Length: 147
Image (cartoon, rainbow, N blue to C red; front, side, top):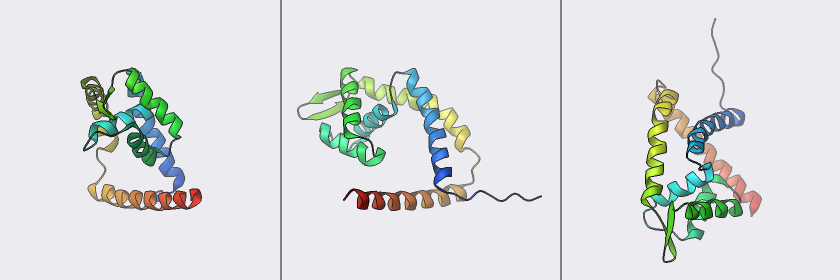
């Protein structure tokens, strides 16, 4: 008996995304942080230079396609929790913010290794090409819809 591999489609992509996000949110909840807060904090930590609040929100919105008001609330919470602080017009991550991301990364690493482990490199490369193309096309369609 032979099994046909499933064809990648929107449903398969969505199911994989939400399954992986569910795993991450399990760990984030332990630390009282949401997915949007984590993405906003990560954007601040990985930025080449400090960002203004508006720049940070625009960057995260570009990735998540989230409501700017929701992202502003996530940013405000990060400031209230002292995971980000204002430095003039810019926001910078605190040591506590950096430590939180490092802790979540360390906690999720074994699970991530089990999820991704054993997938052949050539499959990961092919999936990466397809996902990049899907994201590019979806972003173009969204831009056309909102123009």
